[in-house]
Image (cartoon, rainbow, N blue to C red; front, side, top):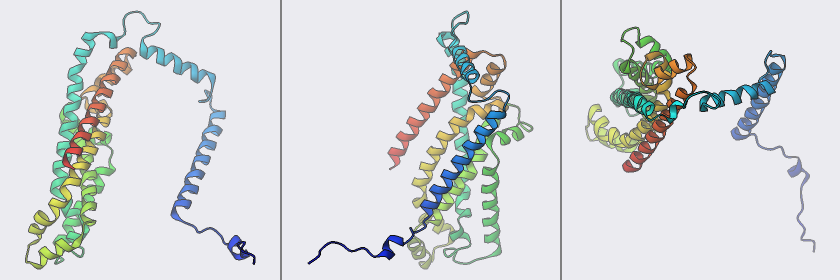
Length: 291
C-alpha cells in the first residue's frame, strides 16, 4: 500500500492570493527602487555630487567645527557660564511646549465629541437635525484645517498679530495639535461600544447627559494618552517654530547658524536633547500612572 502523499497539478498551479499586505510590500519596494534610481541619476549630473569624496570631506570639516577642533579658544559647550546663560532659553522652550499642549488639549477636549459622526449624525444621535449636521461639519472642518497647516506656517501668520515671543510659538503649536487631538479623540468615540449609549438613551438621557456620562469617561484615558504623545512631538517641534516666532532655543539657534558659531550650536543641540529626553521620560511615567 502506497502511503506517500499525492499532489494534484491544480494545487501546484494555483496562483497565490492577492492580499493588501503583499500589494503594500511590493508597492513600497517599487517606490524605494524608483527613488534611489532617481537620486543616483540626479547625482551623476550634479555639479557637486552627493555621493563623493568632497561631500565626505565637508561632513568631516563640519563635525570638527561643531566640536571646536582646530579652532582657537575653548568650545562654548565646555564653559559653565554658557550653560547657565542658555538655561533660560531651554526653560522658555519647555514653557512653550507646556502652553502649546495646554491649548491643544483644551480646544480638543471641548470639541472632539461634536466631531464624532455616530453621536451627531449617526446611529447614536437619537434625532437628526440640520443644526447637528452643521455643528458636525464645522467641527470636522476645524480639525482638517488646523492640522493641515503646518506649525511653521501658523507661527508665520500669528506673528503678524502678536509680537514675537513665547505666546506666538505656543499658539502655533497648540492650534495645529488641537486638530490632531480632536480628530484622534473623535475616532475613539466612533469606535466605542454602542450598547451602553443605547441603554442611556432608552432610559431617557439627553444628548448632553450621554456625552458626559456615557462617552466622556470612556474616552478620557485614551485622550490623556494621546495628549502625552503629542507633548513629546511638540517639544521636538519647538526649535523649528522658534526660528520665526523668536521664542526659546529656536531664535538663538538661528542666530548661531547665521554667525557660524558652531560650538554654540553644539551647546544648544545638547540642551535640546536634554529637553526631549526629559519630556519623553516624564510623559512615559505619566502614561503608566493612568493605566
